[in-house]
Length: 411
Image 1 (cartoon, rainbow, N blue to C red):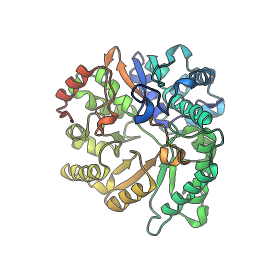
Image 2 (spheres, helix red, strand yellow):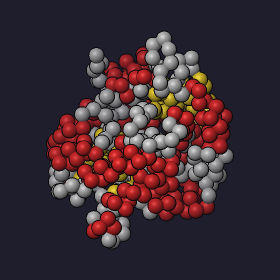
Image 3 (cartoon, one colour):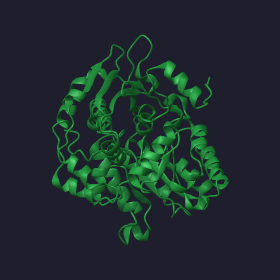
Image 4 (tube, rainbow, N blue to C red):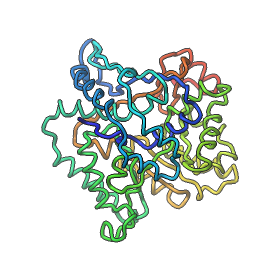
Protein backbone atom coordinates (compact mmCIF):
# COMPACT_ATOMS: atom_id res chain seq x y z
CA UNK A 1 0.00 0.00 0.00
CA UNK A 2 1.67 3.19 -1.20
CA UNK A 3 -0.45 5.78 0.63
CA UNK A 4 -1.04 4.85 4.25
CA UNK A 5 -2.23 8.20 5.61
CA UNK A 6 -4.49 10.94 4.31
CA UNK A 7 -1.90 13.40 5.65
CA UNK A 8 0.49 12.16 2.94
CA UNK A 9 -0.33 15.14 0.76
CA UNK A 10 0.59 18.81 0.36
CA UNK A 11 -0.53 21.34 2.95
CA UNK A 12 -2.20 23.56 0.37
CA UNK A 13 -4.81 20.86 -0.26
CA UNK A 14 -6.02 21.35 3.31
CA UNK A 15 -5.81 25.15 3.27
CA UNK A 16 -7.83 25.25 0.04
CA UNK A 17 -10.23 22.57 1.30
CA UNK A 18 -11.02 24.71 4.34
CA UNK A 19 -12.00 27.59 2.04
CA UNK A 20 -14.17 25.19 0.03
CA UNK A 21 -15.96 23.98 3.16
CA UNK A 22 -16.68 27.49 4.38
CA UNK A 23 -17.34 29.35 1.12
CA UNK A 24 -17.99 26.91 -1.76
CA UNK A 25 -19.41 23.71 -0.23
CA UNK A 26 -21.72 23.04 -3.18
CA UNK A 27 -19.16 23.42 -6.00
CA UNK A 28 -18.91 20.54 -8.49
CA UNK A 29 -15.61 20.01 -10.31
CA UNK A 30 -13.77 17.88 -12.81
CA UNK A 31 -10.02 17.15 -12.91
CA UNK A 32 -8.02 15.50 -15.70
CA UNK A 33 -4.60 13.85 -15.79
CA UNK A 34 -1.79 14.79 -18.17
CA UNK A 35 1.69 13.39 -18.74
CA UNK A 36 3.92 16.15 -20.12
CA UNK A 37 6.82 13.92 -21.13
CA UNK A 38 7.30 14.28 -24.86
CA UNK A 39 7.93 10.54 -25.11
CA UNK A 40 4.69 9.58 -23.38
CA UNK A 41 3.06 8.58 -26.67
CA UNK A 42 5.21 8.35 -29.80
CA UNK A 43 3.42 8.88 -33.10
CA UNK A 44 2.04 5.59 -34.36
CA UNK A 45 3.28 3.51 -31.45
CA UNK A 46 3.93 3.20 -27.75
CA UNK A 47 6.43 5.38 -25.93
CA UNK A 48 8.78 4.32 -23.20
CA UNK A 49 6.67 6.14 -20.62
CA UNK A 50 3.68 3.84 -21.10
CA UNK A 51 1.45 3.85 -18.05
CA UNK A 52 -1.41 1.76 -19.45
CA UNK A 53 0.13 -1.61 -18.43
CA UNK A 54 -0.09 -0.55 -14.78
CA UNK A 55 -3.75 0.53 -14.69
CA UNK A 56 -4.74 -2.47 -12.57
CA UNK A 57 -2.12 -1.70 -9.93
CA UNK A 58 -3.02 1.98 -9.93
CA UNK A 59 -6.69 1.15 -9.42
CA UNK A 60 -5.86 -1.21 -6.56
CA UNK A 61 -3.80 1.49 -4.84
CA UNK A 62 -6.60 4.03 -5.27
CA UNK A 63 -9.07 1.53 -3.84
CA UNK A 64 -6.84 1.23 -0.77
CA UNK A 65 -6.53 5.03 -0.59
CA UNK A 66 -10.31 5.25 -0.39
CA UNK A 67 -10.38 3.09 2.75
CA UNK A 68 -8.29 5.53 4.77
CA UNK A 69 -9.64 7.69 7.56
CA UNK A 70 -7.90 10.37 9.60
CA UNK A 71 -6.54 9.07 12.90
CA UNK A 72 -7.00 10.99 16.14
CA UNK A 73 -3.30 11.93 16.28
CA UNK A 74 -3.46 13.28 12.72
CA UNK A 75 -6.53 15.36 13.52
CA UNK A 76 -4.86 16.67 16.65
CA UNK A 77 -1.84 17.71 14.59
CA UNK A 78 -4.02 19.58 12.08
CA UNK A 79 -5.89 21.23 14.94
CA UNK A 80 -2.56 22.50 16.30
CA UNK A 81 -1.90 24.55 13.15
CA UNK A 82 -2.89 28.15 13.85
CA UNK A 83 -4.75 28.64 10.54
CA UNK A 84 -6.81 25.42 10.65
CA UNK A 85 -10.23 25.93 12.20
CA UNK A 86 -11.94 23.58 14.59
CA UNK A 87 -15.04 22.91 12.49
CA UNK A 88 -12.85 21.90 9.53
CA UNK A 89 -11.01 19.36 11.66
CA UNK A 90 -14.37 18.05 12.88
CA UNK A 91 -15.40 17.59 9.25
CA UNK A 92 -12.16 15.75 8.45
CA UNK A 93 -12.92 13.40 11.32
CA UNK A 94 -15.84 12.11 9.23
CA UNK A 95 -14.11 12.30 5.86
CA UNK A 96 -12.89 9.66 3.44
CA UNK A 97 -12.31 9.60 -0.31
CA UNK A 98 -14.96 7.88 -2.45
CA UNK A 99 -13.85 5.61 -5.28
CA UNK A 100 -17.00 6.48 -7.26
CA UNK A 101 -15.57 9.93 -8.00
CA UNK A 102 -12.46 8.69 -9.87
CA UNK A 103 -11.91 6.56 -12.98
CA UNK A 104 -8.60 5.32 -14.41
CA UNK A 105 -8.62 3.95 -17.95
CA UNK A 106 -5.91 2.75 -20.38
CA UNK A 107 -5.61 4.47 -23.75
CA UNK A 108 -4.49 2.85 -27.05
CA UNK A 109 -1.48 5.20 -27.12
CA UNK A 110 -0.12 3.60 -23.97
CA UNK A 111 -1.09 6.59 -21.85
CA UNK A 112 -3.80 6.59 -19.21
CA UNK A 113 -6.87 8.71 -18.67
CA UNK A 114 -7.64 9.74 -15.11
CA UNK A 115 -10.87 11.62 -14.49
CA UNK A 116 -11.91 12.92 -11.07
CA UNK A 117 -15.45 14.27 -11.08
CA UNK A 118 -17.72 15.18 -8.17
CA UNK A 119 -18.16 17.65 -5.31
CA UNK A 120 -15.04 19.79 -4.88
CA UNK A 121 -15.17 19.24 -1.13
CA UNK A 122 -15.03 15.46 -1.60
CA UNK A 123 -12.53 15.28 -4.49
CA UNK A 124 -9.91 17.89 -3.63
CA UNK A 125 -7.73 15.43 -1.71
CA UNK A 126 -7.35 12.99 -4.63
CA UNK A 127 -4.75 14.89 -6.67
CA UNK A 128 -1.49 14.54 -4.73
CA UNK A 129 -1.81 10.92 -3.52
CA UNK A 130 -2.98 9.75 -6.95
CA UNK A 131 0.03 11.37 -8.63
CA UNK A 132 2.30 9.80 -6.00
CA UNK A 133 0.65 6.43 -6.68
CA UNK A 134 1.15 6.69 -10.46
CA UNK A 135 4.80 7.58 -9.95
CA UNK A 136 5.58 4.82 -7.50
CA UNK A 137 3.70 2.13 -9.45
CA UNK A 138 5.54 3.12 -12.61
CA UNK A 139 9.01 3.20 -11.08
CA UNK A 140 8.65 0.02 -9.03
CA UNK A 141 7.76 -1.80 -12.24
CA UNK A 142 10.37 -0.23 -14.50
CA UNK A 143 13.24 -0.08 -11.97
CA UNK A 144 12.78 -3.05 -9.66
CA UNK A 145 16.27 -2.59 -8.18
CA UNK A 146 16.64 1.20 -7.96
CA UNK A 147 20.12 2.66 -7.77
CA UNK A 148 19.81 4.17 -4.31
CA UNK A 149 23.58 4.52 -4.09
CA UNK A 150 23.49 6.93 -7.02
CA UNK A 151 20.52 8.73 -5.51
CA UNK A 152 22.41 9.20 -2.26
CA UNK A 153 25.48 10.42 -4.11
CA UNK A 154 23.45 13.02 -5.97
CA UNK A 155 21.77 14.14 -2.76
CA UNK A 156 25.19 14.49 -1.12
CA UNK A 157 26.33 16.73 -4.00
CA UNK A 158 23.25 18.95 -3.57
CA UNK A 159 23.87 19.29 0.15
CA UNK A 160 27.49 20.22 -0.50
CA UNK A 161 26.40 22.92 -2.92
CA UNK A 162 23.86 24.33 -0.46
CA UNK A 163 26.45 24.50 2.31
CA UNK A 164 28.87 26.49 0.18
CA UNK A 165 30.52 29.72 1.28
CA UNK A 166 28.14 32.62 1.74
CA UNK A 167 25.00 30.49 1.56
CA UNK A 168 24.21 30.01 5.24
CA UNK A 169 21.03 32.10 4.94
CA UNK A 170 19.78 30.17 1.88
CA UNK A 171 16.81 28.04 2.91
CA UNK A 172 15.03 25.45 0.81
CA UNK A 173 11.81 23.53 1.26
CA UNK A 174 10.70 20.15 -0.04
CA UNK A 175 7.85 20.38 -2.57
CA UNK A 176 8.35 16.90 -4.01
CA UNK A 177 5.40 14.73 -2.93
CA UNK A 178 3.58 14.49 -6.26
CA UNK A 179 6.54 13.34 -8.34
CA UNK A 180 8.60 11.41 -5.82
CA UNK A 181 10.32 8.16 -6.75
CA UNK A 182 8.72 6.45 -3.77
CA UNK A 183 7.39 7.21 -0.33
CA UNK A 184 10.37 5.50 1.32
CA UNK A 185 12.87 7.51 -0.74
CA UNK A 186 11.00 10.74 0.01
CA UNK A 187 11.30 10.07 3.74
CA UNK A 188 14.98 9.19 3.46
CA UNK A 189 15.71 12.43 1.59
CA UNK A 190 13.94 14.49 4.24
CA UNK A 191 15.70 12.72 7.10
CA UNK A 192 19.10 13.31 5.51
CA UNK A 193 18.33 16.96 4.75
CA UNK A 194 17.10 17.51 8.30
CA UNK A 195 20.34 16.22 9.77
CA UNK A 196 22.79 17.64 7.23
CA UNK A 197 21.20 21.05 6.65
CA UNK A 198 19.40 21.54 9.93
CA UNK A 199 15.89 22.84 10.38
CA UNK A 200 16.62 25.77 12.65
CA UNK A 201 14.18 24.35 15.18
CA UNK A 202 16.68 22.55 17.40
CA UNK A 203 19.96 24.04 18.65
CA UNK A 204 23.17 22.35 17.63
CA UNK A 205 21.83 20.79 14.43
CA UNK A 206 24.04 20.24 11.41
CA UNK A 207 27.26 21.18 13.19
CA UNK A 208 25.99 24.59 14.20
CA UNK A 209 24.18 25.32 10.94
CA UNK A 210 21.34 27.76 11.62
CA UNK A 211 19.03 25.56 9.58
CA UNK A 212 18.69 25.58 5.81
CA UNK A 213 15.72 23.22 5.55
CA UNK A 214 12.75 25.54 5.96
CA UNK A 215 10.20 22.74 5.91
CA UNK A 216 8.14 20.51 3.64
CA UNK A 217 4.84 20.74 1.82
CA UNK A 218 4.08 17.16 2.93
CA UNK A 219 1.92 17.24 6.05
CA UNK A 220 2.61 13.65 7.11
CA UNK A 221 6.37 14.08 7.08
CA UNK A 222 6.08 17.48 8.74
CA UNK A 223 4.25 15.80 11.62
CA UNK A 224 6.50 12.73 11.67
CA UNK A 225 9.85 14.51 11.44
CA UNK A 226 9.06 17.71 13.32
CA UNK A 227 9.34 19.94 10.24
CA UNK A 228 7.38 23.06 9.37
CA UNK A 229 4.47 22.35 6.98
CA UNK A 230 4.41 24.85 4.10
CA UNK A 231 1.82 25.89 1.54
CA UNK A 232 -1.02 28.28 0.76
CA UNK A 233 -2.96 28.09 -2.53
CA UNK A 234 -2.65 26.18 -5.81
CA UNK A 235 -3.83 26.86 -9.35
CA UNK A 236 -7.10 24.98 -8.93
CA UNK A 237 -8.32 27.50 -6.35
CA UNK A 238 -8.00 30.51 -8.66
CA UNK A 239 -9.23 28.45 -11.62
CA UNK A 240 -12.42 27.52 -9.77
CA UNK A 241 -13.04 31.20 -9.07
CA UNK A 242 -13.59 31.62 -12.82
CA UNK A 243 -16.89 29.79 -12.30
CA UNK A 244 -17.63 30.82 -8.73
CA UNK A 245 -17.01 34.57 -8.85
CA UNK A 246 -19.46 37.28 -9.93
CA UNK A 247 -17.64 38.20 -13.18
CA UNK A 248 -14.89 36.45 -15.12
CA UNK A 249 -12.64 39.52 -15.39
CA UNK A 250 -12.77 39.88 -11.61
CA UNK A 251 -12.19 36.20 -10.83
CA UNK A 252 -8.56 36.62 -9.77
CA UNK A 253 -9.45 39.55 -7.51
CA UNK A 254 -12.39 37.56 -6.17
CA UNK A 255 -10.09 34.64 -5.39
CA UNK A 256 -7.63 36.79 -3.45
CA UNK A 257 -10.41 38.53 -1.54
CA UNK A 258 -12.09 35.22 -0.66
CA UNK A 259 -8.74 33.92 0.57
CA UNK A 260 -8.23 37.01 2.74
CA UNK A 261 -11.75 36.61 4.11
CA UNK A 262 -10.89 33.09 5.24
CA UNK A 263 -7.40 33.64 6.63
CA UNK A 264 -7.47 37.30 7.72
CA UNK A 265 -3.86 37.97 6.73
CA UNK A 266 -2.46 34.52 7.45
CA UNK A 267 -1.10 32.26 4.65
CA UNK A 268 -0.46 35.40 2.61
CA UNK A 269 1.40 34.11 -0.44
CA UNK A 270 -0.38 34.79 -3.75
CA UNK A 271 0.07 32.52 -6.76
CA UNK A 272 1.01 34.68 -9.75
CA UNK A 273 0.61 32.66 -12.95
CA UNK A 274 -2.95 31.40 -13.38
CA UNK A 275 -3.67 34.18 -15.90
CA UNK A 276 -0.10 35.08 -16.76
CA UNK A 277 2.11 37.50 -14.88
CA UNK A 278 0.95 40.67 -16.67
CA UNK A 279 -2.67 40.01 -15.65
CA UNK A 280 -1.51 39.22 -12.11
CA UNK A 281 0.27 42.57 -11.78
CA UNK A 282 -2.77 44.43 -13.08
CA UNK A 283 -4.93 42.85 -10.37
CA UNK A 284 -2.37 42.78 -7.57
CA UNK A 285 -2.76 46.44 -6.69
CA UNK A 286 -1.54 48.42 -3.68
CA UNK A 287 -4.22 46.87 -1.47
CA UNK A 288 -3.08 43.32 -2.23
CA UNK A 289 0.60 44.33 -2.17
CA UNK A 290 0.14 45.45 1.42
CA UNK A 291 -2.30 42.71 2.45
CA UNK A 292 -0.40 39.67 1.18
CA UNK A 293 3.01 38.64 2.48
CA UNK A 294 4.38 37.90 -0.98
CA UNK A 295 3.96 35.93 -4.18
CA UNK A 296 4.97 32.56 -5.63
CA UNK A 297 6.60 32.00 -9.01
CA UNK A 298 5.66 28.81 -10.89
CA UNK A 299 6.22 29.48 -14.60
CA UNK A 300 8.13 31.74 -16.96
CA UNK A 301 11.60 33.19 -16.45
CA UNK A 302 12.19 33.41 -12.67
CA UNK A 303 14.83 36.15 -12.83
CA UNK A 304 12.62 38.42 -14.90
CA UNK A 305 9.66 37.61 -12.65
CA UNK A 306 11.61 38.53 -9.53
CA UNK A 307 12.85 41.84 -10.91
CA UNK A 308 9.38 42.81 -12.07
CA UNK A 309 7.85 41.79 -8.75
CA UNK A 310 10.30 43.96 -6.80
CA UNK A 311 9.66 46.90 -9.12
CA UNK A 312 5.92 46.41 -8.72
CA UNK A 313 6.19 46.61 -4.94
CA UNK A 314 8.26 49.79 -5.20
CA UNK A 315 5.72 51.40 -7.54
CA UNK A 316 3.01 50.59 -5.00
CA UNK A 317 4.96 52.20 -2.16
CA UNK A 318 5.78 48.91 -0.46
CA UNK A 319 9.30 48.11 0.72
CA UNK A 320 10.25 44.89 -1.13
CA UNK A 321 12.49 43.90 1.78
CA UNK A 322 9.34 43.28 3.85
CA UNK A 323 7.88 40.88 1.27
CA UNK A 324 8.64 37.26 0.37
CA UNK A 325 9.26 35.89 -3.10
CA UNK A 326 8.86 32.13 -3.38
CA UNK A 327 10.40 30.29 -6.33
CA UNK A 328 9.05 26.83 -7.07
CA UNK A 329 9.18 26.13 -10.81
CA UNK A 330 11.30 23.07 -11.63
CA UNK A 331 14.14 24.22 -9.41
CA UNK A 332 17.52 22.55 -9.19
CA UNK A 333 20.04 23.41 -6.50
CA UNK A 334 22.35 25.36 -8.88
CA UNK A 335 19.39 27.40 -10.18
CA UNK A 336 18.27 28.02 -6.60
CA UNK A 337 21.72 29.35 -5.71
CA UNK A 338 21.69 31.65 -8.76
CA UNK A 339 18.32 33.08 -7.75
CA UNK A 340 19.45 33.51 -4.15
CA UNK A 341 22.55 35.41 -5.22
CA UNK A 342 20.54 37.74 -7.46
CA UNK A 343 17.81 38.60 -4.95
CA UNK A 344 19.44 38.20 -1.51
CA UNK A 345 19.06 41.27 0.67
CA UNK A 346 16.48 42.81 -1.66
CA UNK A 347 13.48 40.86 -0.31
CA UNK A 348 12.66 37.81 1.79
CA UNK A 349 13.32 34.59 -0.14
CA UNK A 350 12.03 31.05 -0.14
CA UNK A 351 12.69 28.16 -2.52
CA UNK A 352 10.55 25.06 -3.01
CA UNK A 353 12.41 22.21 -4.72
CA UNK A 354 10.34 19.26 -5.89
CA UNK A 355 11.30 16.59 -8.39
CA UNK A 356 15.02 17.39 -8.26
CA UNK A 357 15.02 16.46 -4.56
CA UNK A 358 12.66 13.48 -4.42
CA UNK A 359 13.14 11.84 -7.82
CA UNK A 360 16.78 12.19 -8.86
CA UNK A 361 18.20 8.67 -9.02
CA UNK A 362 19.47 9.02 -12.63
CA UNK A 363 16.11 7.94 -14.14
CA UNK A 364 14.08 10.46 -16.12
CA UNK A 365 11.11 11.44 -13.94
CA UNK A 366 7.52 11.49 -15.06
CA UNK A 367 6.21 15.02 -15.62
CA UNK A 368 2.62 14.32 -14.62
CA UNK A 369 -0.11 16.65 -13.39
CA UNK A 370 -3.77 16.57 -12.46
CA UNK A 371 -5.53 19.86 -13.15
CA UNK A 372 -9.06 21.13 -12.72
CA UNK A 373 -10.76 21.58 -16.10
CA UNK A 374 -14.37 22.30 -15.07
CA UNK A 375 -16.23 23.84 -12.16
CA UNK A 376 -20.02 23.84 -11.88
CA UNK A 377 -20.22 22.57 -15.44
CA UNK A 378 -18.20 25.48 -16.85
CA UNK A 379 -14.71 25.18 -18.37
CA UNK A 380 -11.89 26.64 -16.30
CA UNK A 381 -8.29 27.07 -17.37
CA UNK A 382 -4.79 27.98 -16.41
CA UNK A 383 -2.95 30.36 -18.76
CA UNK A 384 0.62 29.87 -17.64
CA UNK A 385 3.68 31.96 -18.43
CA UNK A 386 5.06 28.64 -19.74
CA UNK A 387 2.60 27.74 -22.54
CA UNK A 388 3.25 23.98 -22.25
CA UNK A 389 1.70 24.12 -18.78
CA UNK A 390 -1.64 25.37 -20.09
CA UNK A 391 -4.47 22.91 -19.61
CA UNK A 392 -8.10 23.19 -20.71
CA UNK A 393 -10.46 20.96 -22.69
CA UNK A 394 -12.27 23.84 -24.43
CA UNK A 395 -10.24 25.91 -26.91
CA UNK A 396 -13.04 28.45 -27.36
CA UNK A 397 -13.04 29.14 -23.66
CA UNK A 398 -9.26 29.52 -23.70
CA UNK A 399 -9.59 32.11 -26.43
CA UNK A 400 -12.28 33.96 -24.50
CA UNK A 401 -10.17 33.92 -21.34
CA UNK A 402 -7.23 35.40 -23.25
CA UNK A 403 -9.45 38.15 -24.55
CA UNK A 404 -10.92 38.99 -21.15
CA UNK A 405 -7.52 39.12 -19.43
CA UNK A 406 -5.71 40.71 -22.40
CA UNK A 407 -3.31 37.79 -22.78
CA UNK A 408 -1.66 37.58 -26.22
CA UNK A 409 -1.60 34.26 -28.06
CA UNK A 410 1.89 32.76 -27.98
CA UNK A 411 2.99 31.24 -31.29
